[in-house]
Image (cartoon, rainbow, N blue to C red; front, side, top):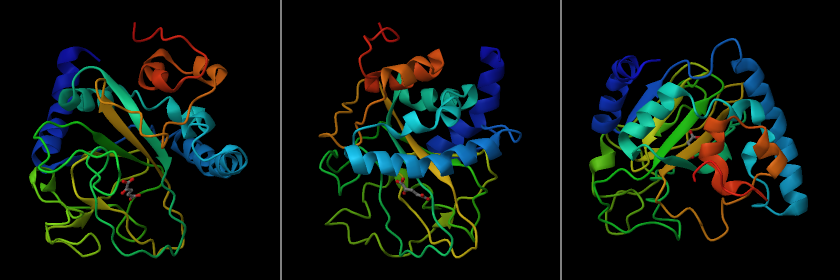
Length: 263
Ligand SMILES: O=C(O)CCC(=O)C(=O)O
């Protein structure tokens, strides 16, 4: 896509992300491949869990188990939106399975994400700076609906200086919040959030799984050494098979490979 066409395509999403704190980008994973990507993600979770149980929780990066999914992470429109707000050089900070089983029950647990999650040790302190320094993406591999656990979000909360986990703020992360709604979209869409936005997972009273992967993007300069948590690495030979655009996002996690992409 030419630069002009890309800008024209992504501008409405960038505007919504800046003003509302979120947007949903459709068809990032094309409809003819989304079923096989979902199968890969669902099947690989058991392999990942078994590997982590035997070798340690933060030993092997989740993305090593889902090479088909990984190839979509550098999607041109998606990265176009993210680069508009984080700057041109971005890396992936965290990747996690977010599969909610049928009849999953949960009270809300509102929070902001890294580096604004006040329950984590590696957070920045309130009041948060106005700069955007984290983007959270939730990759919908089944449709997200209000019946199966579409993520709760509070629009515009990314610019609120209070926080549901702020001890002095009196909000309470377990409560329904004014303005909240559940993000919905069809399989293959991506919910893109300013990581400051107040969001929570939701119960899934339906009979089917709600399958997603969360991928968080950070600007190049943000420290991603999270005291050993979520810093698991990718075997060199798995990294070698990634496309150059995806390598750029994960080179800091590659084992036994000299940096080449960033130099
Ligand atoms: O799975 C979801 O719907 C939300 C996940 C979430 O809150 C998170 O990854 O920070």
